[in-house]
Image (cartoon, rainbow, N blue to C red):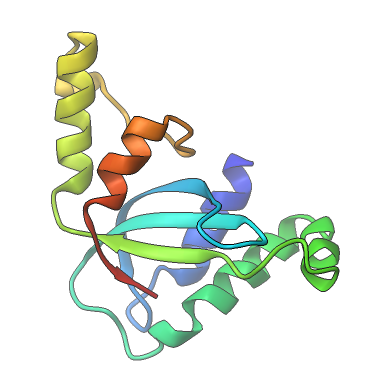
Length: 131
């Protein structure tokens, strides 16, 4: 799964869409059908083609596994969601995890996939915009 998420990030990372600084992914169940959700922190401004971000992320996801297209066609999957968090969100996450686990901030990594509900709530509180 990590390779799929990296490919999705690569598909949206660029001057015309967004410059991704850091990211994580989630299973987005806010609406049905569920989907892959990207939570990203960006540098700079949102690009002129940001409206294409979800479709480009989906195309990248499908290119890694045709089953995603079949699930989409059958109505079991929707386009990925992309939420932009406020600057410093992932830095705050590393500080929070470091304090929680009593480890140095530099040794704390942002997970590629967030499954912990407490962490997800903390990230969702910092969402500034959705593409």
